[in-house]
Amino acid sequence: MDCKKLTSLHLQLPSYDQYDIVRLVMETKIDTVNDGTATSPQGFHAGATAAEIKQGSGDKQDLGILFSQEPCVTAGLFTTNRIKSAPVLLCQERLKKGRAVAVVVNSGCANASTGKQGLADAAEMATLTAKALGIDTEEVLVASTGVIGQRLPMERIRDGLNHVSLSDNGGQDLARAMMTTDTVPKETAVAVSAEGLRFTIGGVAKGSGMIHPNLGTLLCFLTTDAAVEPHFLQEALHRSADVSFNMVSIDGDTSPSDTLLLLANGMAGNPPISSGSQAAELFQQALNRVCIHLAKAVARDGEGATKLLEVAVNGAASKADAALAARTIVSSPLWKAAVYGRDPNWGRVVAALGRSGAEVIENSLDLHIGDVLVLKCGIPQSYDEAGVVRVLEKDEVPVTLNLNLGTASATAWGCDLTEKYVTINSQYTT
Image 1: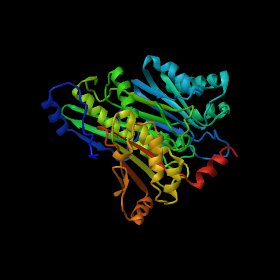
Image 2: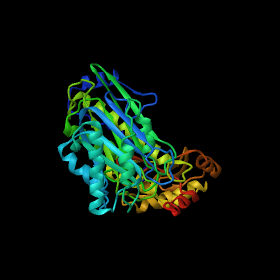
Image 3: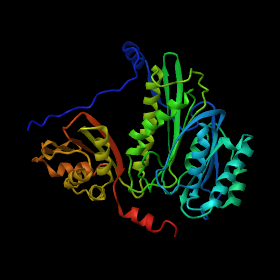
Image 4: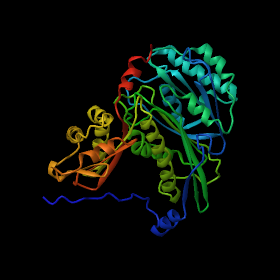
């Protein structure tokens, strides 16, 4: 069989004049904002405090607020776990209106599996926040992360909300307040500059364990000062999640608290961006860049992790197959453990691919570990095993597969599996 290397460079663009597309893209800059965060876009403020929601946490921030000066068109994606936290249920109900002004978030307690009282506590968090900000309680969304099955310490939250001071550089405090087993805050922002169009997209995320999203994600709050049409905002968020957060796996578990929100306050003053417009493609590119940055930050900070894993699958028969294969491999405990131990056992990759459910023909498969070709047309190659070990010793370990069955591709991210992961999760509540 002729085992050709196929590429996937087809770009799906809206249906408008090709000259305008090329001109606009050539004249566009998407720049990373120094110290970018959720408050980098105009009109967003945030703050946090140490409410000691988790007893013994001392002066660690664990309660935060994100606020917009102007009402926001808001989109959201949430956990597909059938067990949903009280804050998720509250957000899903309130987002039927597609608008929000603020988000209040706590770490240390997930407020999940807490029954009617948990719903009441989530609603009270929103009401207290609304009162402090002078806005309608229906305009406040809620998120919680931490231990499942425990009630929120409402007395500490009531007191803590009185001590949250908002500022236009408070995004960094917000990012810290969301952390549980995270070792570093996760935040970024990009500024888009094109002919007649200027806007910024920023965001913060948390996640280190119980990470295997599907149509939702960890906790992540994205902001933009662009004016965006509601339907397109939801579409854009879904597309970005599919190439970023939904392509991350730490341990194969999906949290009941997963919440991804995107708030657009329109303070950049642009005409509302809608599907099929020239600005839509630019907005999507910028949003993808923010989401992929945050998704990789989550994977890199997996519980106990020492390495970031990247699996790129090319030449798949369909996009769904490419994504399925990449996610399955990056989720494989055997491959994750092999990477940690610097064991050049590439058979772990092939075995995970074979069980993924994606269409695979063994004698069409090419496999690289880093830049080392170990399999060509399904046939093992002569290679320097020490070269593979050197790839596995790096902080980032890339794997590239070409299925040679089509033009679809996808990339997934994860981390290695270490003893420390077991330690963290064997002592999580003790």
